[in-house]
Amino acid sequence: MLTKEYPRHDMNRVFDMIEEAIAQGGVDDKCKDEMNLLMHLYAGLPAEAVECGMMYIHGMGADVPQSDITALHIRLLNLLEYLEKVESLRQIPSELTNEEIKRRSDVLSSLEGHEKVFGSALLGYRYSGKPVEAKEEGEEEGQRLLLMNSQAAVFACEDIYKTALFYEDKLGFKATHLDDEAMPHIKLTRDNIAIVLVKGDLKPARNYGIKYDMYIYCSEPFLLHNEIKGQGVKIIEELPEANKAKSQMSNRQFVIEDIDGRHICVSQFIENYKD
Image 1 (cartoon, one colour):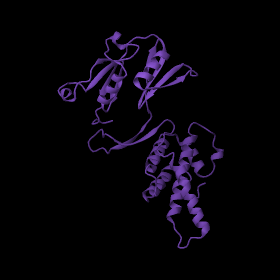
Image 2 (cartoon, one colour):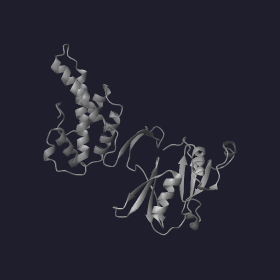
Image 3 (tube, one colour):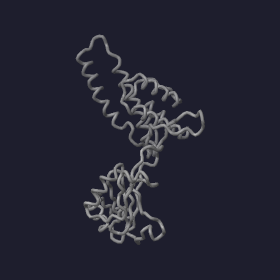
Image 4 (cartoon, one colour):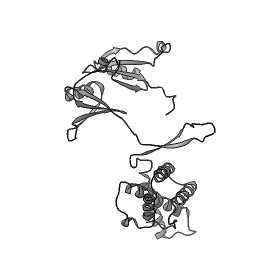
């Protein structure tokens, strides 16, 4: 429950107050990212939806119909309650009674419950604290919301279970069977890679003049190459030696063939590029 006095119909002022409270220090490292995420989302809402957020702030959330953005209002309340608690802890009386000590201890312990959601996705969006490249000279670098969080390649297979077993046994993927979905499929995951296997006609990309069915970018291809080769996976193109690769026009890479005949290129990840 909030105790401070907030403006009745001015969400911009509410966020000014949040920013001022964060500037005082003593908050979680992700607190500012949480503020920016909420601020960007409220900025894109119609006035009526923003007013619903103001009603939550003033204790009238029960009068607001539940909607897709209810989670946004709850996250805003969570941040405001957190900052009020941090501010209360800054005020240390000259003398502390046992009751006051216990109260402050309880408040301090409760902060973690607020902080655990800071920086997590909200309404499908995640906030990026990385600067975005300026489009014009003199334009300030900004921040951005990321709506697309991940992706997965889709492989059509004659036998999805046979293919899944190959990727598990030979390539170290973990298979999740999702037969209850509208489109029954198997999801393969390893590290940051996801592949979805569906039953369908198998047509490798080579049939259409495309060299590879998938690219996998790898920080150190040498280690992965040795692992895969040790599992007896067919290597179509060997990994060149590091010194030899310096004179090549392409990235250092190797190509494997999976059980269905797809060619997958594992290419060295180059870190010095902009998002």
